[in-house]
Amino acid sequence: MTVNLEYYKVFYYAARCGGLTGAARELAISQPAVSQSIRQLEAQLGVRLFARRSKGVQLTKEGELLFSYVSKGYEQMELGERMLRQLKNMELGEIRIGASDMTLQFYLLPFLEQFHEKYPGIKVMVSNAPTPETLERLRNGQIDFGVVSTPFEVGMDIEQNEVREIEDIFVAGRRFIPYKNRMLDLAELEKLPIISLEKKTSTRSYMDGFLAEHGVVLHPEFELATSDMIVQFALRNLGVGSIVRDFAQEYIDSGQLFELRFNQIIPKRKFCVVRAGKNPQSAAAGALLDLIRQDAGKQREEQTDDKNGYF
Image (tube, rainbow, N blue to C red; front, side, top):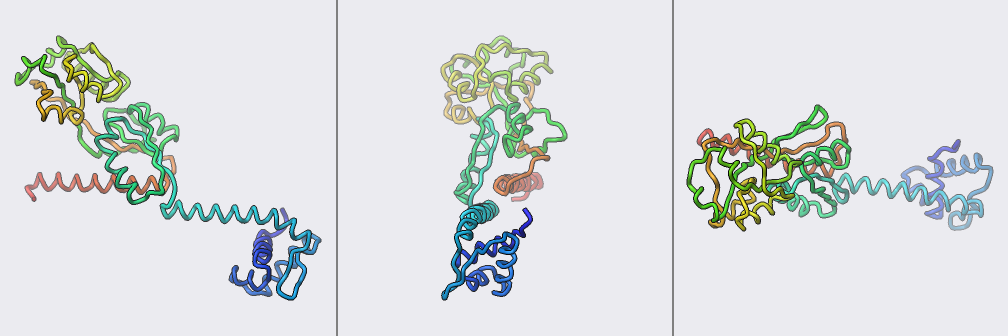
């Protein structure tokens, strides 16, 4: 294309406004500048585009043909600019997040609610998957960020920020009441019917690794896909559930389940926000991450104040 695109812009506005004066006003340039651009465009194309009338100008047949194409292109560019402004102003857009049942239910959900109230035009899509699958989707650019639980292995390509502690426990129902309020050795778990998550989860990997360090190897009677199902199996006295405390707390408080006690402390784990440093971050994803970071900062300040004895 040898024609200056600015000439087409002037042509578009002159045709749309039906006169050179209106085009000059819309473009914030002088009328002589509009006339000059039209003459240059006509000279380069070798056709007359406008015919002068008593009240402005009118497109010639050649001008009508050209306008039918130029208008589509220019209006698409204007639409593109408008969409970009809306993205920048958080009026529309989308966020893709990876999260497990646990991280979604016990961490991410309140932030999604707060974000949606503030930015109702932003579409949020959550891919529900275990930690290893979430990390793979992050590396492949399928999600903007993920919320996962430790342990997991990441390389230099993944940024991670710890945001909350979680605690793994074993719970049981009335069938196992003889074990209540007893201080148990971890090895006693090998004698019990265990209900756990599937091996592909970070929760299962963590518990297997911790127990192996103490010479304990479990062969679960039930391996389930979700922690909610572990609670339901434990409530029906089908075994002892290996689970994160959050899922079972209401049942422990109500007395339907009890927590087994051990002479070895099970170290706490973390929820982490992870993102791929190489991937560009949208304005919408950045705004949601800011909410999460602000909350994490407040939590750290409160923990520091508690340690220092502040109220």
